Length: 311
Image 1 (cartoon, helix red, strand yellow):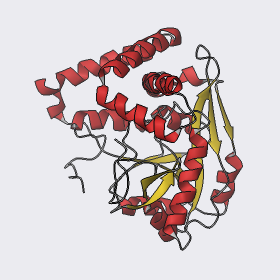
Image 2 (cartoon, rainbow, N blue to C red):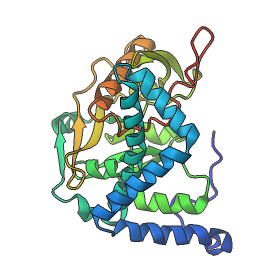
Image 3 (cartoon, rainbow, N blue to C red):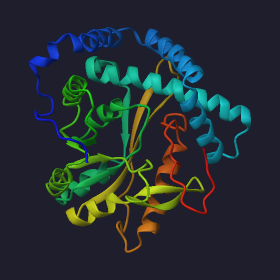
Image 4 (tube, rainbow, N blue to C red):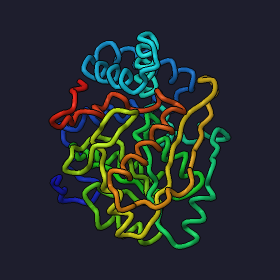
């Protein structure tokens, strides 16, 4: 359980003007300048930064390569290397896309489309809350902005350790999300679901077996969270898979939001079977744009006795 701050999220503190925070303020001004640069320059910078990160962030690079090796065994060694590098480039592009969503949202005008909105609208018309089962996409908050063009999403977030950074990110996100729910605020999460909200929730990371079960992910056993089963059961809400991604020429990209039909009988009586189904949904989504996912996370770090080490 994280320590709760003694101030409200997004609240300005006079202490933020102390010298210890000046570096962050300078960094924010720099980021705002980057947000108003032409896309051609943003993309060029993202490619340079992505290649630099791939070269120097050795641990993240190793994790990414290993994840792609085990999840896409059909790829050659050259394809794994190429796509791993592209993951880092897409992450940097995603940072610029997020800056655009925060500070220069007109960039996305006439670039966004959605498929499957009727699934969400039907569920909410019936008074049901919707848990949007998403992923940790390199699009970051730009993905939330894409969704917000068609419906009001809530988001589950983890507060930043630095209070100034937490305030700034919270305020930027407030222009995108209807509500931001602390990942420890289960009551708030359930309350919003009961009130018919649509909440973006990502069950795609390894938090160990105290919060999940082992289930195949791309054919590899992985610790898979099951908290969403309890949320759905308690709130009597439904689960709808959510995916957003970029396509087209990078010089003139297009962005797509995909809402799939409600996942039937979730939760069922079998938590392992539910985990298998959700992982399969995520797999199918990630195959649409494989490098637009944060493969540098150690998805297979939990290896109980009897399971081979991955990293």
